Length: 226
Length: 282
Image (cartoon, rainbow over all chains, first blue to last red):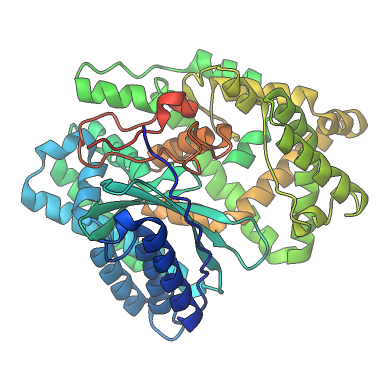
């Protein structure tokens, strides 16, 4: 339905430290964008630049070998809050049960849901070994509310690259991630299926879901190392 | 999961049949929302599937996972890589055949090139020279071929020891097992023990290379059964489309999900039917 490629190719790969080269490539990409797509010129930055910056920030802040896992989690939490539409995501994963949730319950579900993600994924960055992260292209039309940014993580050991597709929500000039698709599997859809299974079984018992989420967070906390 | 799935031998048909006879059905819900979810997950045999899933989980925790940890600890990395390459190379004939049946000439050619390169120059498949030479690797199976031909997946099925599948892919795996030249050779030369060794090595290799991923998924999930079912269904649809959507735009996920109309059916139809690439119309 009128969705076409923007035909933009950027190959900025992230190095361990933020290099001048990356900045130059981003600047070059921005120049290309504005010259070939003048209709986008009003936007302060593109969704591609948003994801490149997020990738750079994540590696810079989280891959630091000298910080504790607690500090890594704290930084991960900040990155999530700043760059992800957490309220929208948690509403989505509740599926048809979302309409029976009070605002207070919703904000606690959001908090716990994000905490599970923090405790599961933050420590992965501790073993970062210089994998390349590059944007393949961006799919979307100017003015679209949702833009897909297709990226690849290239492992250092010669294994096949892992495809990550980021679904970005654009609100004027600001962007927020709403979903990540890992090799074709959407995290939002997978987690909605998980939450719906739990809620269907309990007859939509939200306090029960909250209790399970709290227990999950406790478990993950007690398992992890500082 | 994909690799576990592709291990399937002819016994898989018997397992599917036995599962059917033993199985109970989940009742079809009357509430419209719950019904939409019931149809989306394609899992009318859920009670039976959950029971088999529990069995597989216990088998994994007691046998496969500890064995995979031991395998990593005892067998040197280079040897494990050799075994991995060798097992993968043996899957080539099935991929070539199914790529051809799907009209995927490039994939058949790539895989044939890989197979010849790795078998002749890579010491019978122990060294993956083809990847170093930049020949891409593909996996095709008869379940994917049936899907390309328009066969619906049918109900989701968890198979004992083999893991997530569905009716179509279970039958596909049985057929792959029957036509696999290496499978026939191993059975003829070494009998069922030979087939069992290959199956076990495949399982070990797969489990050992996914230790952390599976642990993380399992630990973070509120309902691991639902997580695996969803992941399997989406991943399968992605593999059937070979990472493409009909409009060629996305690398193969469900496309743009509508996060604004939460009550809409947001799940793409199975296997990437043409109406799949849901776009966002404002």
